[in-house]
Length: 346
Image (cartoon, rainbow, N blue to C red; front, top):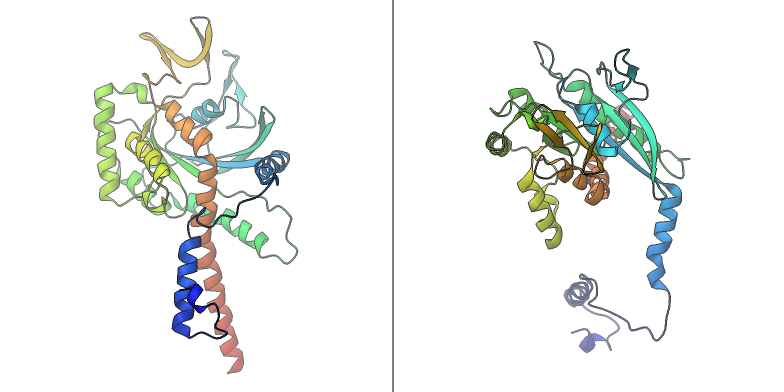
């Protein structure tokens, strides 16, 4: 059709639509329209250019941990990054020279810069108040929800600023690790209510804390009950199926969803096993190795959060959760401005 209309100077609107539809259909998928190059151009260096620039700038990753006191939130974060990152200062016991993590009393963010093989990461860990520890836990999620929205508001204010910074500081929460008590019975009403309130504003990853208190059979039965409760409550946990467009990503994320919620054990203490240093918890019955797939699913959680999906967590935060917040906030401001304009005319 395009060839037959080339000699025309003017085309009808219907013909124009047909021509554009045909052209767009050909260019929708990458690689359909390719121009052969006759020599080396250097396009393949773009990846290296991006890598160098990114390494020079460094990376940011913000983690929030939510759950009742005593579920090992701070210990798990320390285990994930193999460093004391959950608290800037730790109390030291007189009896035990090892560092003891103090109890959380309020929403508190602590940032660290950690480096590995030339890659610098600014890690921010946000701990939460004694969530679910009171007799009346009504609206106990509000301080957490307000904090998440405050970070979106800070980013938006900087983004729409006339003289904004070259690189906007990103304090937005990229992932919320929700700790489920290993009761073996199922989710509590508070668990369901919290995740229903937050799954639309942040990437929620539910995990079963202190999984070594459950037998393998109890653990599998518990996970099945949790999955059923999440489906019945229509709670979207990360990774979200409705956001997937690539078949390969869909297969990977389907396997992750089948494993969730991850049953984990955290420990920042090292032990000697066959001449190697391993992280684990020593009990009267033996050593529970944190990174052993046969003992718990900590390694699966770590791989997803850091080694395979860290950038995707940031992308979903920016493109989905932040965009939803941005749309609602700017739309609300537009309505206010429109109302004030109408009042001034009256």
